[in-house]
Image (cartoon, rainbow, N blue to C red; front, side):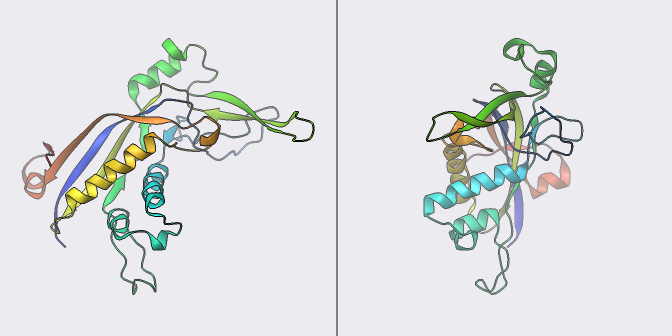
Length: 227
């Protein structure tokens, strides 16, 4: 196959409810947060590309009834890649879809830090906490309380997906599947604790642009993608 261009899918991911994508806790604070969100080295929450890509793939796989990544449909393997195995004679498939880390939108970042608008009651610079517990079924009382850290509702993350376009006439079919996965995600959840109210998101201001190989040779201007 010959690479003939790249298609860029970009926009914002808006947190409709608090968003929790777990990070590591290096220091144990007595009375501190039990479940942290993942952050950059500067302490700013972000959405890892691996989390977004994995969720998009799993939703498409769920539609086709696949519970094993090695048994995903051919179109899923064509888009997201397929590692060499004995089953595919060690050939595998290349990954066509690249998913960047989604960073907090700069305007929203400023509002979060300065506690502006809907973020005026925010506990920390970028996050809030939500208490959770388990219910004892015999007594009906709450036990084992813990604090969950979340990026608050209303936060925006800038995202970018990059689709590598080859000369095998599968671009339109693949983009249809990617759009379907994005729509499915809007009616599902991203990150953890989705069954307990976290992780509802929507995609906003989505645009598609293409760079063909001749553009790489002459300019960096992207062209709107038309199907």
